Length: 48
Length: 297
Image (cartoon, rainbow over all chains, first blue to last red; front, side, top):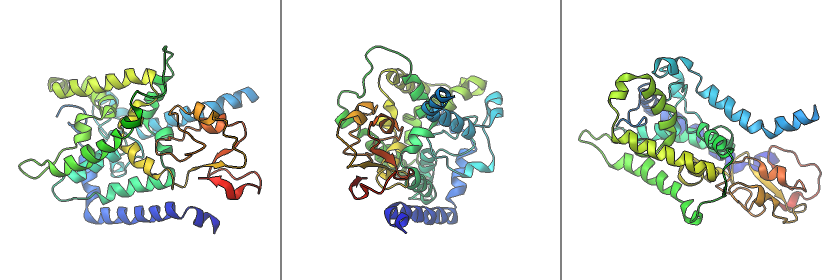
């Protein structure tokens, strides 16, 4: 019980993270991330 | 045996850094063929600044992914990547920077090279340390969101104009192995290489200049340091304010007063330096029942 009270802010943030991840997947953001990351990012490597 | 254990303990962080860098960049074929991994693991963001165009990268860089979502036409907020950032932040704070970031490892190794007149901080550190927040708000959030091309698409400004990790782990190996990319080199590659060279040289004298002054990922995780599950606590009953923790800290943080400073990367030097065992992480159990109420977190 003490653990939950002492870490309430972190646990609340973890719950928010879980909600955000779910919303993100539902909105199709995960596909955007995948699409970007499986192609060579020209900006990242300094070619424009 | 005892000496070996001490040696292993002293170098534990370096080995964890090397191990995690190897694990998150384990696609060896990419380095040989001059291409990148295209599998489903790239749905997942890794905790550190690890360019997804690194030939070995198995996951996605959270800062690159964040910008790519914001820069796309359909979204004005990146819930998915923010979820990863909050998750890693709430769990570890900047422990990620100290233990799991490949570019942090590079800077750590460079700083081990002996050069004369090493210094803890740059002149103007008081102001320069806020530069990472300016980069986070400007280059990672506002510019990708607001500067759009004719079809409403933005750009990953931080990756394009600043990120030295992308140049080192993605640009150089890909360009070296791919003649088509070599033909496309221009001023941008020169600019990014200059930033990388500048930071490499600076790392010899100053500890982790990129993490301290420029990294937007460190800026985000630093905000979680005071609340993360992994935090530091100073036992006020045992602390004598001798100042050895601050002396040991490569970022010159006053650990006794601010154990969860946003700049702390959790290297643990202060814990080892404290002669009274007054500093400990939340993962360590308190040795006795005394002094509970006076712990500074």
